Image (tube, rainbow, N blue to C red; front, side, top):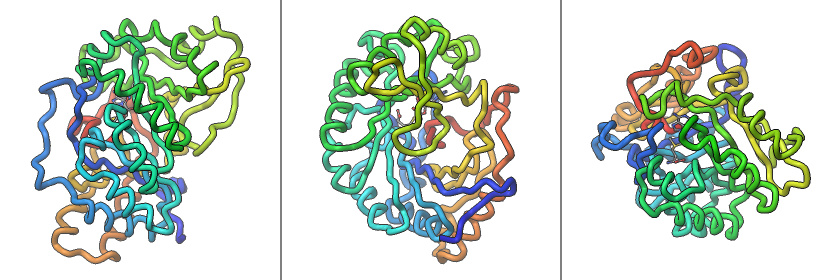
Length: 328
Ligand code: SAM
């Protein structure tokens, strides 16, 4: 491994790959129904093209990949991509972020293809509310079943991502946290990034500081280490709990100084930062037959564009693409 680092001496070893901009849910804070124009199918990278990008990135020092979307499991044949990536020796961690609705169907196949772990988004334990937040009527049971199946096939850990929104699901903080006591749930509460609009904008924001205060009724949160990885979440455990509670603070306390990521959009653009509009096109060069050394140069150019930090707290959000296209 040669090691890749940006202009601020941050080591870059992590690539998040959006395999589709399509999703079978329409979360109010991410891609509300009819709000997002879909990419033409022909613009979406094939698995072979994604594989080539990852090979080039791996030669530069990327050793961790996360597959995301849109909803990655709505793309046909996802286990085939996972298997292709898993046979690359220098990639030693493959994970997936999903809404979980199709997880019970594919978990075993993904696990045997080489997937190690999975993050499942779940913002409410209440079925009616699930319908309101995601537009997915009756799909909450599928998510809960998906979580159990993922665990039973040995995807480990299964982390639950919960975006907390005032007046929408913040009254469930204690319920989610309580699940970590008996059930070995690993719940991560995420601050809402107000990128979409009035249903999930600045007035629904709840800071992690406030979330922690609301959880005080359950006892002291003991800091602990994550079971796997060293991402942006800070982890805690309630007294006697089997599981953990993580907090992610993209707004109230950015973690850019430890950012080790690049993002590949479904249409083949490399984004050095989720919160910046800079991107470098890899799709056209790939389709014009660019060689691995050429691709590696473009990846290095993207790394050089990584900003020192994002400016979400100051109100700056990129306007060019929704999260569902960049791969949150
Ligand atoms: N469909 C998959 C899923 O539901 O997890 C993967 C894509 S989704 C864009 C990835 C993550 O981004 C989810 O955990 C989601 O909660 C998070 N996310 C999307 N929009 C967000 C926002 N405005 N603020 C905070 N997190 C957001």
